[in-house]
Length: 129
Image (cartoon, rainbow, N blue to C red; front, top):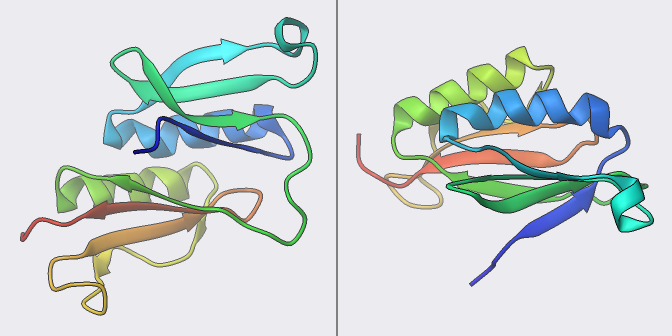
């Protein structure tokens, strides 16, 4: 089981409002912020729910030419749609509009958006309808 995941973004101040908007429909918000002064190096923003940060972005150089794929579970297809609209409105790039991906399984309903660093951020619902 994964406790949390994190990665560097090129511009944390630009990425912060993008992730705030994109993850809000999923019930995910900022749970913790740690400054570069506190860590002695990089600044970090922890997104999560119920007081538990589990998705972190940080200052630093993103891995050149390598992009991360993160999929968040959505409670319904409507939440997947809301994630996609919010992420696109916040400046994300389309990487797959909401829809069924039967090649994964008959009820796989997902949407994919690229963040400002090219990371593939997905919301997925595995429930029928």
